[in-house]
Length: 328
Ligand code: SF4
Image (cartoon, rainbow, N blue to C red; front, side, top):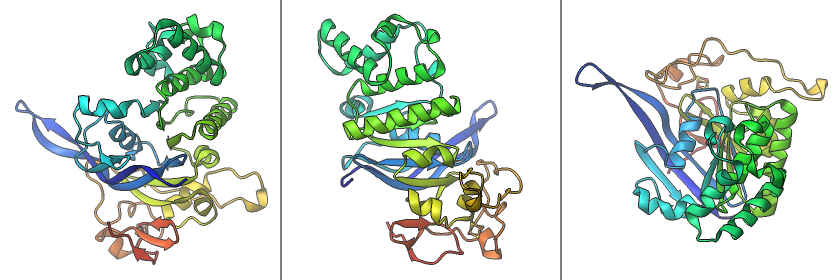
């Protein structure tokens, strides 16, 4: 893992709320605020947080499925956040996605063979026989049988449909796949199979993943580094081992306390956070976590904590943690 393929710098995405006959903007949903991270070649960054924390919006912004409000997204060093659709086309092939619900992301009226062939036709000029051969090899690669190519999505099980979604994402030979809750809708046993498949593909093809999940236990196996998001901001980012062995942010601590551990002697005391996640329309001032943080102090209500490097490669935004502030 050496070169950064993707750099996200101070990404901000607000959605206007419009009201009245003149559709005046009455408020903003602060979906993502000042989020920065990078992903190297062959790396998996896990992006974790409760539902509505902005992780899927971050994924959509990288894929250019939503316009950004502020900040920059660089792909191979080139800014892509302001490219037009036609300028973006040369990067599209390399940036693909696997979504949570393959049932709604796969066209129910298309046969599996055409679902996987579509991106090949879009990006390459191959004849029918060559496309069919590629689709067949992709089916085999993701653990589907060639005779299933003629089936429709509803004829597959949940796990098989997700394999089909992965085959479609792989078809144009991508370099980065945004996996947005790819196993959340699957049974636990099937989850492990799909995660293992993604890891095998990474080892074989050198792929990078942004792996979005609401559950730390799910990202533990697959991620090299993990970023924890709360209410639109990244509160902690580090390598997987540091995060699981030495979490620094109180929110990460709480999330980790819910992760089952096989050894009862190492079980953590469960931390139940008070209250619900505040509304992103009107996020709390200061540290956004202060309304639920068991350690909150007076300044947490007014001062936004800056991101600090508390140990090499371990970044935390909390007033209780020392370390060098990150200046970008
Ligand atoms: Fe808690 Fe304050 Fe740290 Fe925020 S800055 S996590 S409120 S201690």
